[in-house]
Length: 383
Image: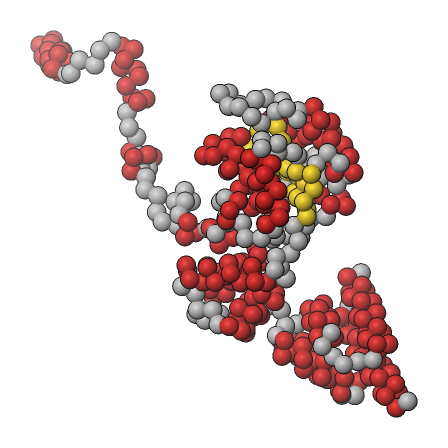
């Protein structure tokens, strides 16, 4: 038994001597922790970003609003008076605090981002703090984040930084009051650009500290040029009546026009008038003309039944019918008192709908208003 135990000890000693030397005991304890673990999945080197996945960053996945956003002031196609004035401010190094206001989709954010690129070049993101509606813009953000950014100067950089407050009309009154003092205190270090849709929601103290520029809705020919450019770039089959429908529904909003165009391109091989109105859910002009014809020529009960049937078949909302009818009223030949009466009644129906009244009750009210206006016009013609 003793000889057997000695033989086993000799074998163990030989195995230990033949094993590779791993260094000291401390190294032996560290070795298992740094060994690669294949059972936990692929290593970082084996990870491959597939097209379309998060992180790919290809321009093909971008919305066309961002893909074709102008990058320089010279590329902005509208509001040339504003662009020339701001360019002069930049060339003379006298840029003031700015207040841009106007309807959505008119180029306010695009203009200020182009200004930032012209001022700071490739490093513009490190010199600009941009806050929009998705961020908290209460008084705490003004006191902490905005004040902290405004009170510091960039290392190895000259000039001022920029703070962009997009959709600032959503800021609370207390936050705007706190921002007033920040603008005064840190003018040497930073320039503010306040962007909003409704300037009446910005307190007068902030308005007086900024140079105001109003961005009006874009002209249809300006939107048409941009649509033609994107149509050629993306090889879109856009028919003339489809383009006309796009321009009509855009109402001077470039963002809305591009979003509708991209949605239609994804769903239809050819973009015509029917495709545009079907994609947006707006009633077709032909349907609005039929509704007007029924209300002006048919009896009350017959017109009401036909309009209800059309609403059910096409899924048209009464608010959309009111909007379409209002646009067609300008083309109708009516006595002035009848036109005024109809406009008053249509606005009353729309107000009641937005106040919570049901379409079941307000639709007969609209049809009745047109029947009364028709009778008024008949009596005026008989005199």
